[in-house]
Amino acid sequence: MNRSVLPLPPASPHPEAVHPVVVANALDSLERALQAERRALLEHDVDALLDSNQAKLVALRQVESQPLDGHASERVALLSELNRANSVLLSRRRREVTWALRHLGRVESNGVYDAAGHAGARPQARCLGIG
Image (cartoon, rainbow, N blue to C red; front, top):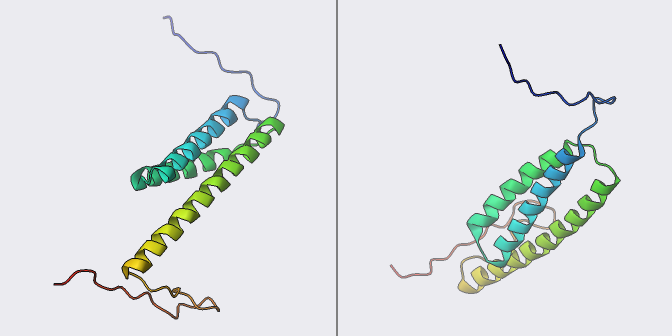
């Protein structure tokens, strides 16, 4: 009987060692997710933003589960910068939406939380239509 058996890779002297390709693939997934998140923010695509955010969380879990070498650490730093740039875009969008809703009369300009961090003030929704 002829069985085709794939040879196993040689055992690593360090059981915690991870193949560099696994780390690179995880970082590639994270980069793709961050780029998709950026596109979604620039194109105002909420569904794509939610999908890319989910992909980013999955990729982050993969990256965090792997030990990183020097080269991977440099790439993580670059991806961190991309994530911060996306955060700036997201903050800008949030301020734009808040401004638009306030000017449409949909929410009050007061925050939901007071200075002590307690939920004292509640947003007041106003009906835009007559009916």
